[in-house]
Length: 639
Image 1: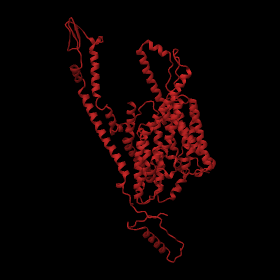
Image 2 (image 1 turned 120 degrees about the vertical axis):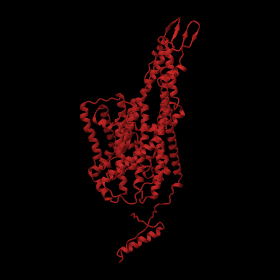
Image 3 (image 1 turned 60 degrees about the horizontal axis):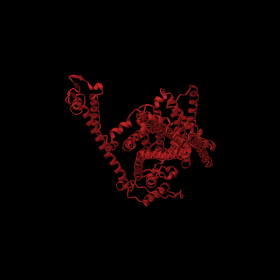
Image 4 (image 1 turned 60 degrees about the vertical axis):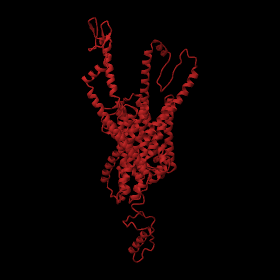
């Protein structure tokens, strides 16, 4: 039993025990309740002994934050200076000013009269009194204009194009904000409905976490029992499927974008090759005809008649080269992902640890989450993305299990994609085997532990099923298969009317049964095993249908809603918003000096506030860490 009392700071544990025993005697003056035995287990003083100014981690996290802030301010000032400088230069070198400068410095004029070549003011060549404009005969005047324009353009581009300038500008608040807040996709053929699905899924996650946040600080605990009996509360209790949408999107994008990028690189390579062959003449054209060039993703070169190497030896060398290339490409893919995600992730871990330490020291509530202890000991598990393999009680940032799963799935997905470049059938078979294995493993664990799903206890099997990759792999693999199909269709999918007629009821039936399928709020053992093993994959199939439909009906209402331009910035901020929103909830709710009286209407208002604050904090973290790292990676790739 927890008792909250406002007492003098000088009160000790013994003093509180005496007060409680005195209270007990006063309530029973005749000694009718001799069996009453009171014992004070712990007295928590508010505030405690923690001093943030003596915490080394506070200075580390704060120092990093201040250093990044100073760098952002300097970069923004530098970008503003560049913009003003280039704008002024553009104005001074426009129209007549450009022409005058070219005439004074860059033009070459020819005057031929038999005694030599002299400069001429009109740019024409005169011979024996007759004039002829050399620009019409491939002469000097036209080349002079081109040279002049190139000189002006190159001079205009000098400022801000160096390597150091590009690195510094990566931290600019101005350009990073423009990129984040841009309401148009960078490419016209992008799958824009993905943004809407990502935003709605995160909104769903924040909603269920808001309910859990308020349940812990509410004084009317019985309202939770009544609320959980409501049929529509299953929307909150079964919100774990929102994360499956994230997994589907990740699998879809890694596959679709990889093959699409490979095609772009191949086309650029072939264009350069064709241009080189055209320059080298007919001899090179004959050499070209002796080889059969294919897409680098499926290298199957044939031998020249003059080549004495046998086909077997050539194939062995090609396979060996493909293996080395695949390992190297896998390393690059993993490097880019880890470097892109980790800086913001690590900074949020630091903030979260400090926030929980402060809340535990100053809150009148007893938190059952000890991130200030777990993050101090086990933060390295998060950075290695293996924290989901450890018990819930030892996890730092409990909600970061998603990050670990998504990275582990990324490893599996990258291997399957690289394998499919040469052995597509083998890769497809492995994908199917992995999916079936995940079903069997999840079902087996559920049955052997006699698990019965309950809407009131969604995290009952957290350590065995909820956050484990074998339980969540299905949607990711479905996303990969869908991404490959869309790529093979060239980004354009055609769905016949009869398939629409069949698929929509099936998809909506799956979604409805997964969310609202718990009759009386629970399921028996065998239905639970089927529910937890197949359910996540079935959700991925439903999301796949929605994506395919939006691609096929780009002018449809559903695609227009999910592709609404205003959602794009929110979608870009989803990663950081997911990381930081529980920390914001803990700071806000545990600053109360007393319990909160729960009501569904108030929950919705607080939910809106949580969403807004999460996105504001997400913008700050994204513009300081995520956006600069992405730009630095692009610079390193170009170099």
